[in-house]
Image (cartoon, rainbow, N blue to C red; front, side):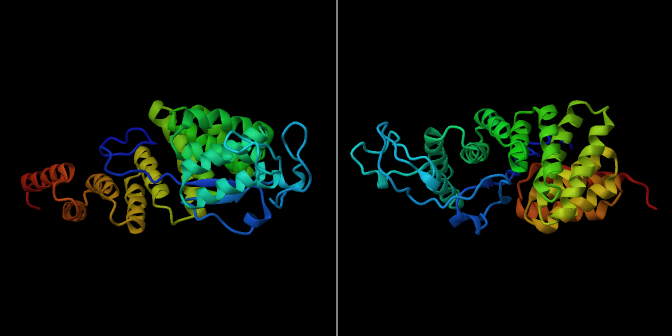
Length: 323
């Protein structure tokens, strides 16, 4: 069974990768104490000052903007009426808070709009830049996310999340040699975040597929993915990626064990079960392989790959001499 591209769904798209959502929350006190209900992790950038997000006092300036004070830059955008009083006009910080709230509800397109409004008012705001970059990555707009995150990193180079989200976007564009140092730096900036290690492992796996002769990349992938599972052993996709790396290394028992862990966490995933059949066959655990295939066929009776593998195992067993 081919592993294929390390950042793509295997087995003809039978499993859709659950790409996790991360959001860089940097801004207001009202949001600082709550964690985002995300698929992966919400975090706070290290160098952003907290702001209260309240409308600033003071009148509008001659340029059509009002003094924002602690509330951020106030400026009318194309959707704000020129006749509206200044206190009805959102500050850039309030636009960021609005985007964060949309993110929490899974309304990524609306979050994108809110962050773009914030950037129109405050073009070099690293919070808005990085948050928009994260949303663009989640929306699959990698070509837009990459330069935006690069800009955010140039302003705030110690932001671990920005580095690994940039790495994730670069991985999706098969730019693994660029993704790897970004993810590696993320792990150095925050050694406690499993997503940085998983992103590093995926970048290294991409390089392995591009150049199988370079075993150093495979060692990097295994080390990074093992570390990710040590920090968080509840993420099935990390175990799946680690199993892939073990398989490329030729460690079929470790591959089978990692896939078994992925299956424990996500028992209805057909892809994981089909992939586990391969090391089981190599280890000559035919009965266990047959059991996995029967479970697949119970979930998906028309699964052609399971039917094919089951037929091959049955044929091999029937042709083998009786012990």
